[in-house]
Length: 173
Image 1 (cartoon, rainbow, N blue to C red):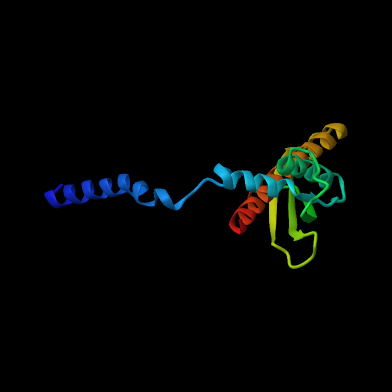
Image 2 (cartoon, helix red, strand yellow):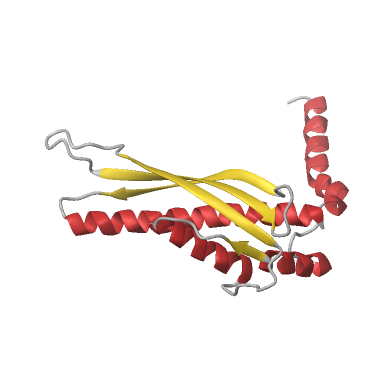
């Protein structure tokens, strides 16, 4: 290794180690300080509209807990409207019996955050979650495994939506 290569490597290493010092003031925590208290107040002011189907029930419960700790604010300022689409794929099939040995639940959630007073949507988007589960010859086990997959997908979707809503409300504040 030549001397110029050693110098280049050391300079690159020094720059990589010093880079966080240059951008340290550019970032601030979303939930920290006074802005964090304001964001928490804004999140508590979101009313989650009812979502049909069993997975919608799981998702709305997860969102209510994630946004406001489960307490509903009577003076809500925003509505969170969500519509779900779900489908099941069978990625593995037993070649002897022709039955699916696993299933994959795929859920897409279209969401919109709208002021209760009216006006344009503050935020809209699509979140998606997937959860796989094993299928056996026992019908009850299959139903329970599918329900557990719905619960896992609802938690994933709630985390995604909460993070995106938090970021949008933090930008507004």
